[in-house]
Image 1 (cartoon, helix red, strand yellow):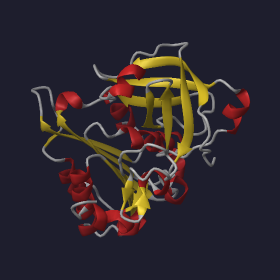
Image 2 (tube, helix red, strand yellow; image 1 turned 180 degrees about the vertical axis):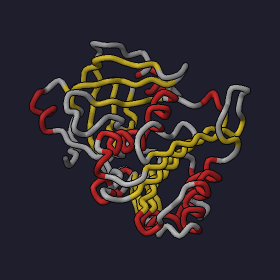
Image 3 (cartoon, rainbow, N blue to C red; image 1 turned 90 degrees about the horizontal axis):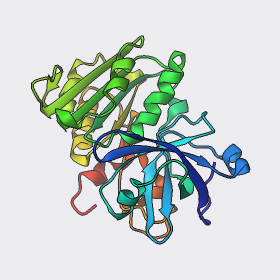
Image 4 (cartoon, rainbow, N blue to C red; image 1 turned 45 degrees about the vertical axis):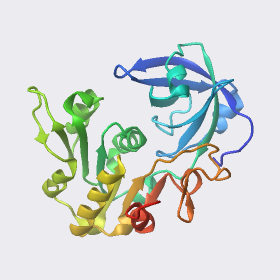
Length: 278
């Protein structure tokens, strides 16, 4: 569905899930039945959520694109708008514009092996892609999910990772730079785990999301493991204000991240992420 730049549509909070002390998921539904039926998105796209008199913020869509009744958004309360969003409860309303941007190449990835590399608390943009593959497991080859955090206490959705690890042809590895005494997986960088994955480079599609230094390291290691740069995809974050490339806040070289991304081929943006000033 091509996003319109008009007024936000009303969405109602059906319920919320508290993920951590400062992270929560809002389960939203567009109140207009026709808008709800027409809404389409690809995993990796985002919506702009608005609160009257306060402002708007871009939030990745975390739900399955075939589940039309609800739109899930996992949010960390770190700024003026998100702290007010954190106060919403079932029955409250929020403005919604979207979907915006380019998502993960899910259709092109069918029949291919997938390697998903995520870091820190930036895993929300790729959770919808993982869920998409899990719900359609027979359409994809091997699945490797590598998630890294700085502190082991930062890991959210542990139950999901445990469930994914039980799926056929699926490998899940977790990494923590600073583990607690309960930690039973890799200690160190998540990118180290790429050496443990038995890659078939010519049939591998890599989805990478997290802090930019981690994505630089992950893409570089994948390239050294002979994965073509056209098969490596990254999700970028910038200061989205409008969602349609008009305001210029998210410009990255020749691209507007909100419009041309946030998902890009590494072959197109790798040189920009490694250049100071971009």
